[in-house]
Image (tube, rainbow, N blue to C red):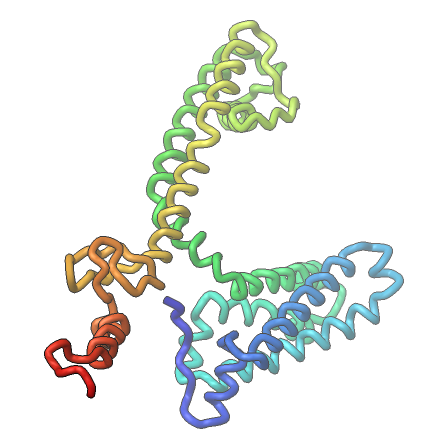
Length: 303
């Protein structure tokens, strides 16, 4: 189910709500496409502005284009709040926070003039990249991934906790075996080496030099290959479960009680009973019409 915010009263506010928050009409689709292009364009400007050569050559252009996007997004947020019944509730939501993060950095730069604030201005400029998160609003399947992450969070946490214990044990053993000259100067440093080795990244900045330490490295790498697919399998199973849950309905058949039908199903898979209890079965209505049109067998033949 799509939990959209509720529109405020009034014909104009309702119409604006349908254009901004829904996507089943031509104006709504056009608005979504325009907003996606604006988000991508603003993110591209932030990326190009971070390149020193482009910034030195086109800094004024980037500045005014950025202000154009900021004003457009500010107007869009104001219109969103105007057409909602509870605008503060939207501002506290995920997409409401992203809307604020997308426009506040540019407005805050007006309050932070001077060379002493250049570091803060740079941070605010980079924060604009979070506009790309708004694209999640236009991906319907993103809800399935979020639901799968929520349901698999407990299993993944237990998996990561187990991996952390293994990494700590391997790191402590290698720290005792390897000399400090090899780079193992502390247990946290050894934990860093164990994580890099377990994930099969292998930076090579810290390498065991003793035969026993190298043997432990082999064990850590083989362990990494063995367990690296565990969280992927857990998450994939939850994604499949979310897809099935979204595809099938819990509505029970009035004939046999079977309750696992596809949402578009009209007749029961088990007994063929019409599933919609609020409307009559068109098949039975057709049969009654055919029976009424058939001539009575006991009636005398026409002269």
